Length: 291
Image (tube, rainbow, N blue to C red; front, side):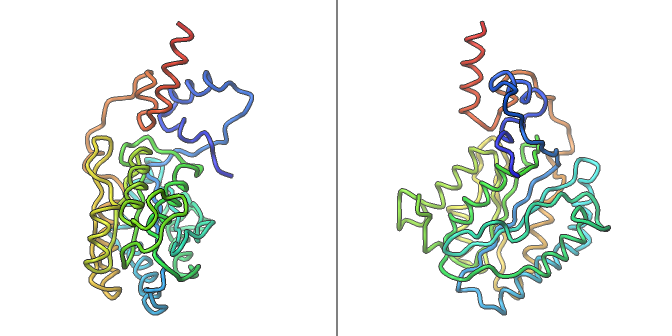
């Protein structure tokens, strides 16, 4: 079950209090779990990726999550709520549900879906869901929806991350894209949607062409609300493991921004709902009516 009130809860207790005052208690919110970081891995499985390349692709992720530095970065989140992680695939469209649905990782080993070891096992057994054209904005849109509707929440400004990996440029669009055939603009529209939701998109391009498309149209620009995204490049799938390992070390777990605590959020609606302009306007209107 996915939480429809998750965006309201992102600001913590103050936001929840305002949400109750606005919407009442007749429709109880589905419970969400506080985590340090939400991470959605979004994988291109288009036809340009051969089955042998997909094997290297998948094993690259497995080996990267077994890397000691990556595991230490993940372990550093356990006393802060752990990480929520899921994996999705896309080609001409995004495949749903995610090939590995959301898991809350709170330990390195152990039984059940809460351990990193169980997630790595799932990665190793992950099937390929399809093979067709390359709809980058399809993968972006699905990943944004997954983060916005899962059962987890983080109040960190840099805590919501999408990891897009691809070996090519877009050559198909979402049916809803208003600039059909302009693959760059369709991806840019989803990038803007991610920025509006306070989500960071990082990219991994296999080859210079894919990396260039990601840099220009996909990854998060400097915007003042979150840190900018970045692109890691692999020359081919034979070097994918090293690239994804470097990428995870950079994007998972505490970063420099976590070394100095920021100011506590105040009870104002703008602080509680920093990611949502629409909700801020709604709250301000409600306050005026109560004055």
